[in-house]
Image (cartoon, rainbow, N blue to C red; front, side, top):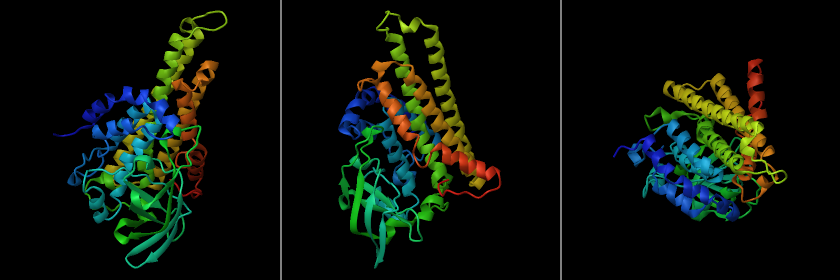
Length: 380
């Protein structure tokens, strides 16, 4: 059976009520809910970008953005981890064929976190490397079967793929935003990694060579990541907008008994919320389309990469501003931990600070480029 984007979206849609119902529990237990991850695995989405030769669906960036957008509308934490699980299978194609075969030997996907860290120490040894250090913010580690570990920066910067059994996970994830991701620390100590499970960090971040013919696998890392995660932001804003509408539909003012759904100001605010959410979604769709054009042309110039980063930063900031406006108008009871809107509010504000997306850096890089100056930040 040929699996299409539409089929996957239909299968995901059937899981959204359950994912939304478990969102508060995920936050309370500080990790993605087992049932939510299990349901998404059963929906067949994790292998959407895995090459067909390894049993994957080999779909496109539009499928990736569409699925992560849908999941995130129900739960941002689950959507974030889902985006990473799908996207990191794509990242595995940057590694040697032997480790691709190892990871995809028993099923056509792995559940793999990655978080580049300057704290990883690398020692070349016979047949490979010994690595030691701590990697923080490892989203996806709580259901992982493999782990990607990368040293960021330095002449010896490399990335590694290791089985989950070879690392220690330290429970440090006590956060007010994205609490349900369980993005705990990964620790290794003198861990031997064979050569074939490793690539230079430059090949992971900027490599365009691939054993696979599909140009999907020749995209540089950061332009891919924007398509991987921006659906999370936009889907989260859509979920927040729906939650805000439900509040306004049902709320009666404590003092005076006015029904808010009958007030003109509420109508204006709700219309603005929907307009911002719709605009963010349209900007995402154009970002994905333009990235796919560059992908097919196999050309990601400095102009293009800085433009895509600037647009991703703007989308993230738009989502943050939009949810903040809704929260400021939703009333005191909306800060109750049982109210979905406050969770979207906290999650989107945290995500908007992510180092790969952060708006001030994205805007500065683009502004410098427009003035003929060289980039002063490595992530673009």
